[in-house]
Image (cartoon, rainbow, N blue to C red; front, side):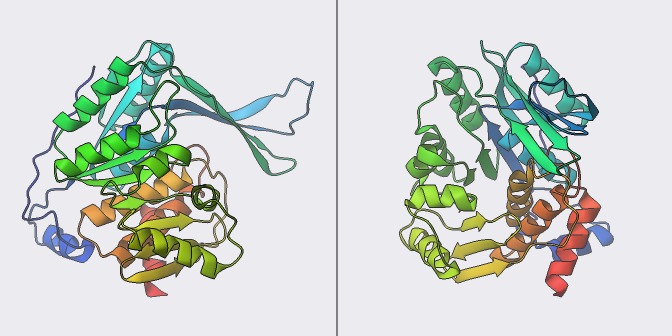
Amino acid sequence: MREARHSPINRNHVGLSIEARSACQQQGRAVTEPRIITVTVNPTVDIACSAEAVYPLHKVRTSDEMQDPGGGGINVARVVHELGGDVLAIMLAGGFPGQFLEELLAEEKVPCRTLRIEGRTRISYTVHDRHSQQEYRFVAKGPNVAEAEWQALLTAVEQEPADWIVASGSLAPGMPEDFYARLARLATAKGRRFALDCSGVPLKAALGQGLALVKPSAGEFEALIGYKLRRDADLENAAMSLVRAGAAERVVVTRGHLSAVMATAAGVQHLSPFGVDAHSAVGAGDSFAGSMVLALARGSSDEDAFAWGMAGGGAAVMHTGTAHPKRADVERLYAGLRAG
């Protein structure tokens, strides 16, 4: 198990807005970051490449190979780190792929803490077909996780100091479907803010457990509520219903190239997508979540944090591989949103 460096939390600066933080830094005053922990129960080594064309029953030659540390919470941690936040990625990992995953995180200088499991960490594969301009994604199911292993993860998260906890990604086989609900209760009992990006039964089980933010995609949101959303008004009403019912303080639904919608007690807001050249959508949702949570942790308003999230997601699709938004791109896209 590798321990990360821990940064002290200065409560006098945690709630500063982005603008106030920038002013402090220009004046030479130290600003201590709020601490964010991400949780990844089913991480992956993401391999991405390009091929001239993908054909069945033929040997497909690839190029431009990339290996990235992947899995929802890990992607969030990488984005928070890129944006200058104080983050620790806690993950379950095993076998040689798990060791490789640690090496990849070390190369990016992302602090992590690994809890070893018996099973081997999964490997996923993304192929960009240059001829059709389509992206093919092959995502492995992942190893079985024993009760003692996921219980150890709950204990590890409880023991780590944090202001925000972000859980993102699918559960591993063998884990209880209410794992994220248990994690949410643990976090809120400690006075921590909890953000969740998952789908299906694990998402439904966690609603109403003190969630500060949930961020499903449009398809995941429709599966959650049990019906198709034909109009924008239907989406708005469904998201607001969850907020009013106490399911979560903020419900953000991302709709890929269409837009994103955020519902809070103050109402509904929409943001349109950016006109950027898209190279890969892998990890874009996690980039959205990481950018938005970091802004909220730094004291931004809901509206401002929503714009940071949109900028993070937009910057991610500009680059190949998994969740590779560049800080300069995120800041530029955010500035354009706020100016508009």
